[in-house]
Image (tube, rainbow, N blue to C red; front, side, top):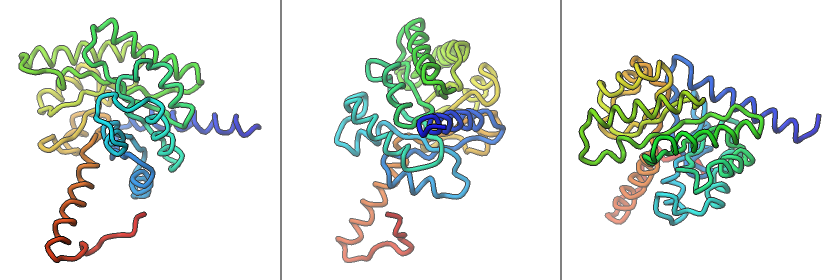
Length: 265
């Protein structure tokens, strides 16, 4: 067996493993990472089963604003370094695909990524469905069961719209993405229990992905409600930066480094 074949087989196995983690009764928590050292730190935590990147955090670490301002080549290089740093399956946040979702996903697979978030950005539904189809096509072309966490921005872009209309939009879009083969539907936003329950009932158990932010439902409750996956987006980087800022203030005030600081790098 050639080395290339071995690598491909390993990638296919990681994709299958990631899909199974999404469909398992136990909720999948992915603590988002943004570079090699954050990936290695999180991957070494007992019980961690998969990693997910955060596009916002990667862009910020490289000096770009969020929202596809980072060149796609830099994003692919960043997620590739993360995938190479761990044996865990890695799902990448690839925003809306940087103008060419199929090519972007094929390039991501080429550097070891086996799943991705892709944003619909509330494009007209037929256009958004076609966009998600190209992502699945890319996985098929590369011979793996690529894990598409199809993201609808219904809540993110809700503005002052009627909450019931927003929820109905999320349901309609999510069902359309699942119908073409998406693994899960990612509905970011501060969702209350009624919204989560409605979405799970519409999509089925273990098909909804959410982001947890300050004020979100607890992971244990989300698991009881049938949610598949929780991610944390840029909040994990914000936790790290808050600790850094607080330590700097303490040092400038004449204090010391925090007790219990570990040499993780």
